[in-house]
Length: 186
Image (cartoon, rainbow, N blue to C red; front, side):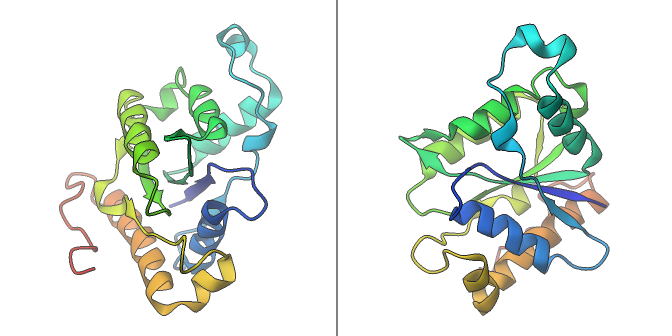
């Protein structure tokens, strides 16, 4: 079982990237989480290039194809999905391997609800299987803005562990997506 964590920001101090790295470090044995760091290398999506996609787009598609599930944490810019995240998703639109791909969408900012809803709409339109029990708001903006802070905060690290556990459980029992939410008590 392999989870690909995707931060939708290129900022060096990105909270979303810190979240993805923390998830990789907190993942239980047997559930590796790999952070994808190549979104900044993707060229702007151009359908004319799809038949012979540029190497960064081929690497991106292979990484997504090789993952059992995706864990996306992406910021909101001007009430919308970040350009880098939307571009990455555009490169997957025609990829049949993305159809039915389990995806957990995490929102790390208490102010970023427009992009989260837009991203859910995009993922559903692309026929991803959104893992509702693993998709949530984990509002880190004021409390934990670095990977180390997330790891050191018992509440935050426990929530991150539960997110990864929810993805793992959804993959083990795909017939009951969202049936058992580990967030009911939080």
